[in-house]
Image (cartoon, rainbow, N blue to C red; front, side, top):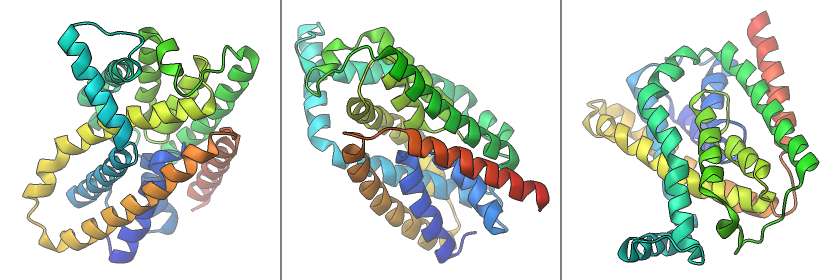
Length: 284
């Protein structure tokens, strides 16, 4: 069980690291080990805590982009009504691009998520994957600089994306099933590689993340409702509230940040924290 202080710290970490391209799951595995907490990360309470904080993050994303989601849902229903996806209908196509991009991670998540988390949940292994996540971010920036395919405007980038490009970003999102790899980092990197600029890649990444985080949380929600550990309710609620606040701050900052900035600082951070963690775990 987490104390209230630990719940606040873990909730803050979840809210920030889920949307920053630095891997929330990786940090959730590493932080307790670095701080010497006696937390069983396979314990039912800890898993429920992570589900609750993820759900809080998904609700923030949904609220932050609620205008987009209203237009997207209306667009999907328009396309269903006319039985056609019109490329000129930007939000209809965006909706179906999100649906298609969600499928790979959705299928693999249902089949392998628990196995991957168990297999790679060792803090030592996660620290290595954090380094690899940083190198992935470096690589995405390097490859984009070499290709520089096009610079799509915020209103026009959707109509220029193809279905196969959306699937590629969706496949990149699958990396986040491995603790240490970032969902945001992999999808923004995928967006950059198909020709999106940083701002549009980040926007599509956040929209793409919303349904997958929501679905994953709702699948685990029965565990939260049926949990008989009433003493755990307080830390879970507090941690979730903190996660919601930090998630809102994160998405507000990042949508502005990626208008002009790149992934390099996050790549440096992941490599540095991964190397530091490896050194600490080795000598401890």
